[in-house]
Length: 145
Length: 145
Image 1 (cartoon, rainbow over the protein chains, first blue to last red):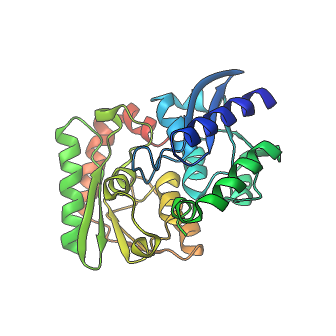
Image 2: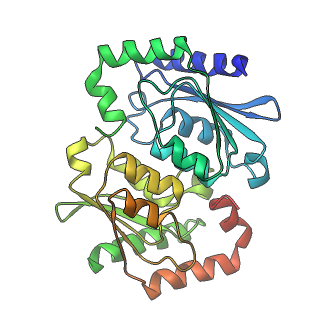
Image 3: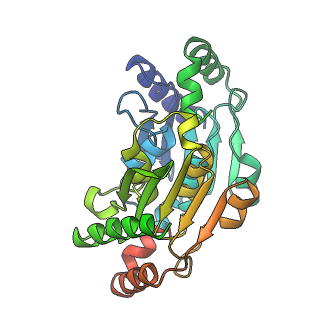
């Protein structure tokens, strides 16, 4: 489980190096990474390319049965939009890096049947804390604040 | 209100003419359309560009205060992902063409404070019924079935 989160963290770091918001995600199907993504708000002037959305977009048009075999890893607790995408495609499990800097609708998703595991990773936490401290305005924009 | 739905319907028809799924959306701020969009699953091989998402993406990076002055019009009841985006950005009102062919998490969004108005439009209904009849597999893919 940790190795996939490491890949998500690499995506977050890639985003940071591009001048973006350091959140990364990977989609794993049957133990194999089938897509990666990171937040591209800055890079693509995008209002919808959060890490999980970018990752799902990079995965392409999958079959419903494929999504059901997936686990999505994200360095941060998915927001309403990203959790909504997870619910739409019925991805059964989400592994998150941390939810201390931001917490999406985890309780709601659990009620809808999604399994959520929080690794409470210091690496993920540090990435976000530093970013939020450095660019609070950008961070607020990303979460609709 | 009807005139904005007419524009959303034009977007849906544009999508259909492109060989896509006929769902359209427009974003209205203070009585003026600031963005339009339509489902581009086929056109862009996209897993995330539902009509509302395409519309929000076309609107660009808005300020939080701007989203709060918006109404989003969609020819069809928003799915979990699209409603999630509406919740993320705290768009206070959604006007939908119909929810007979598909109904997203309207009750949940209402509990979260979103005002939802359903025009129950025969034009919107006919567009979807015909499409679903002609391309059921594609439709199921779009709603994660």
